[in-house]
Image (cartoon, rainbow, N blue to C red; front, side, top):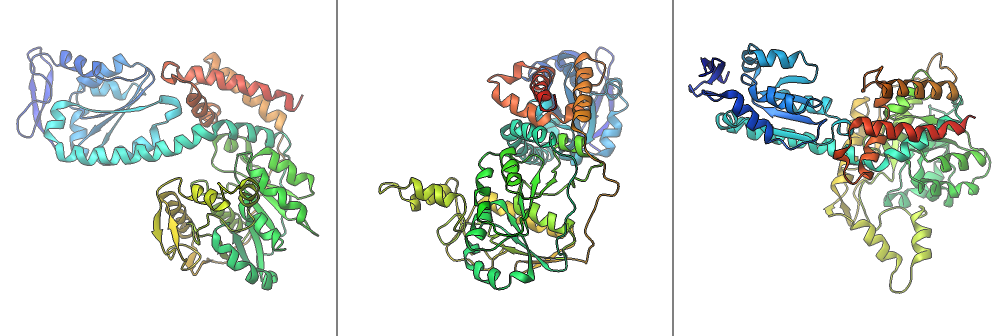
Length: 508
């Protein structure tokens, strides 16, 4: 508890006292002081504002008046102090407004993670009440660190949405337009699943995969497909989650296939060209979905399973697909999550013909590989913490370390233990979605547009399951606007809706 009681200001308002007897607000005119506080905040109209220090909340009251569309997260030192502050009239009024939340410093980062939506609010502003800051300098340092760490994570996720939001939206709509129901799969889960990634160590594993082919059900990532097929290793399934057009080039090796066609497992947000190309060659198409809000809205109750991919890692998606198919043993090949032997990828990936065809005497393929690897700062590693054993001349990045860590976290979550690149878990039966309904694109899309139109007309809350499905697209639209702060969430919602109406041609 950082407060000791209250005193009256000169104009009759109750003011909290800190434990040392100092007042939190002006003893003469706390309202004027509060207006100065609010005027110091530079933010857009529909902002997310985190304020450290609640007290009698005069400053919070002024901030809410200045930003009538903002969401305010107010932070107090501890639970006892927070309960003390709730006795003041301004705090009670703020709590009833529906756009104010009070929490302790310990819970601040968690509440920012759950409440702050960059597509909706734009930037997040963090500000501290001056007297509270002076009395809680140590706590404030801890608070700033936790909030900055959380905002960094949110920023990384948002930057991905801003980059891919438009592609995801287009791919999902176009893939949904032809989707009815997933085919039934007949993968032999009594075998060990071999999940094939495209790390450089895969080159050394090809001979063993050929010799022991009948011992594995091979689930290849799209990046490793070319490497397998050029070594005459036919996968049972191929997993692809990339929204970019370049992902279609991974499948250009498919004509090398002979005999039974592998099932192609695509995220519903995968590039449409890749899906159509694989389908045209006779490969069965099996859709999975990530946590994208549009995919969740459209495919709830269908035969499309929610599949984890960590931070967008196709190797994890392939592992999770194997888990859902009932494999209790998964062996990872080429899951280096680092650069080794001076190479970024195994032989035979889509990069190899691109680099070789473009190299000249003054720009060799080795230089192109080096340029790819040295895009970001590298750290030397022996690769022993990854899934391919000791690796010579290996270098890693923070991003790759994150992929390796996320893969281990995924394994632990689902009860798999890791040893020598092999994940072993409890015996499972192949997962299935009981009573899965057939998807009707026209019915879904008509209802989708109708509910978005109701929101635009003001008959529904601005933030509902239909508008939430547009948040990644809105992040992308904000990025394209040079001065997006001048535009409200409602403006971007209208723009997103206008883009969606173009897709009505898909079923007309």
